[in-house]
Image (cartoon, rainbow, N blue to C red; front, side, top):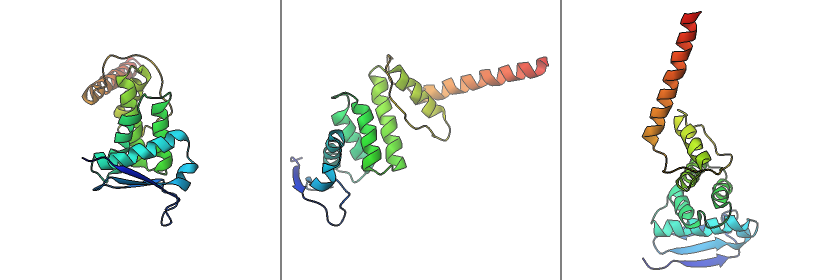
Amino acid sequence: MRPHTITYLPTFPENPGNPGRCEVASGEIELNSEALRVLPNYEREFVVEHEKGHYYKQTFDEVTADAYALQQLALKKKNSLWHYVLSVRNVSHNDPRRVRAAEVAALRVAAKNGSADAQRLLLNYYANADGGYYLDSIGHGHIEAPVSVSMNWKVFAFALLIVVGVCMFLTIKK
């Protein structure tokens, strides 16, 4: 693949709030200077990497482009994972599909890199049948390996059996 090109335009008259766009086939990235001006630095970096993601991954899918941005930005600066999630929230205007994917992706990176809190939050996320978990923060801690989804369900099922067993025991005892 040949390198992408980046052009800064004063604004996008047809969509002034959109900070960037990419022509996937050619790799031509256009950035909206007016929209970028109001974003914090970390969101500007996210927008650039997100648009590069469209080209390098040859995709129109926003979640895939978000994931590429995470690969480029994760753990390179303080609070990078939190900034990534905030960037997705703000740039996508809280698109639930993109925000949820960003939260889980950031938690996976944190869990792989030693956060026991991230591992716990992932367990809670996968154990919640309706997927209703939303990220509040990323904590610090230590784990040895990334979380396995199949193991999460086993742990959840085992815990549920213990709770049901205790409830049955207490009911019979009365």
